[in-house]
Length: 151
Image: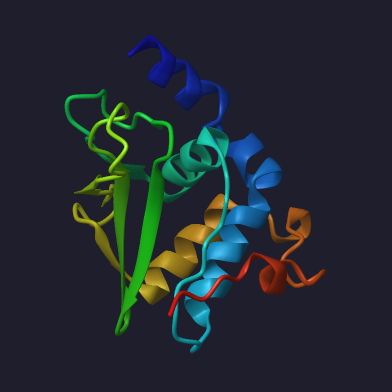
């Protein structure tokens, strides 16, 4: 639990996150804002998971691990369903198992009390959590490089 607490402090300070992790916030928003079908994957580390969690006010409980743990090979899944976005935290059921079986738990927004939020609410959270001037999304072909469509 000490590691999780440390990561939340070192990677979750709002002022730093808004500037240092602006691109991941804006890239997720841009990916959800397209009408293209498929899946967009972004590779990152616990730094980005902690930043997204802190900036968007998300919390997840990957039992038996600590709340908001950022486990190896874990991910946040943002899924657009109509005019709502659902967020789940995915992690390996057993790190020693070679099957790759994943467990999914809700990533709850503090603002809604659930893992769902309107697209308008999500856009507002991203705008408050990140500094657009510090983002490279829209300035370079980042979104095209990062896009991986699964069929």
